[in-house]
Length: 221
Image 1 (cartoon, rainbow, N blue to C red):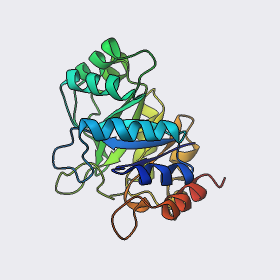
Image 2 (image 1 turned 120 degrees about the vertical axis):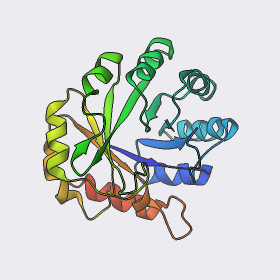
Image 3 (image 1 turned 135 degrees about the vertical axis):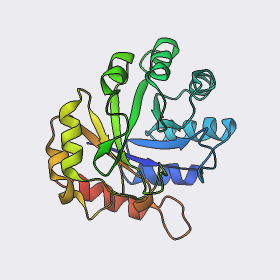
Image 4 (image 1 turned 90 degrees about the vertical axis):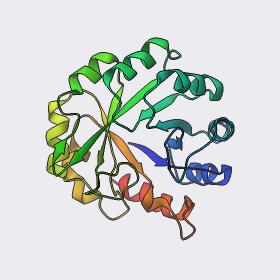
């Protein structure tokens, strides 16, 4: 099971996530108004720190223009990119065509009240070259990304059954709700989890102790 913690803004946070057992650390780039938004220089610095600590950096973005994303991936030597907005399949296709060999592309699928906003496009994303999906919840007001809203396990497994790629699970995951996603965890294409809010301490920074509790709980069986 892969464990990803998202939204690091400092080298110390990246190190703490490595100590907590993370496989991946999310770095926000071109997420307008995002509290964990990074400059190009910060992205490059934190990606280097992640690699030094044995954690794969993931560029997390809402951007729809492939060109600056490809520049950032190349400059920071980033092996993963997470399209967390409503990017069309053409963006995936461009990243696959023009990105470095081995670049992993995760496309987020947004669920609200059990309905997937990209439900009619999943096959197109697969054909375009996505490596995996990431299922996340949409807040009642339409906000996406780091909303701490949880998904319904039945909706997750139903969506997984309709798609052909491995998937990461997000949306309000914490150390105490693994059992609520028994169906998702048991699914043959379940790849791992993506956590933000539950790994943060009182100052809003990613916290090693809280992150480690999540890792232990989800990898305990």
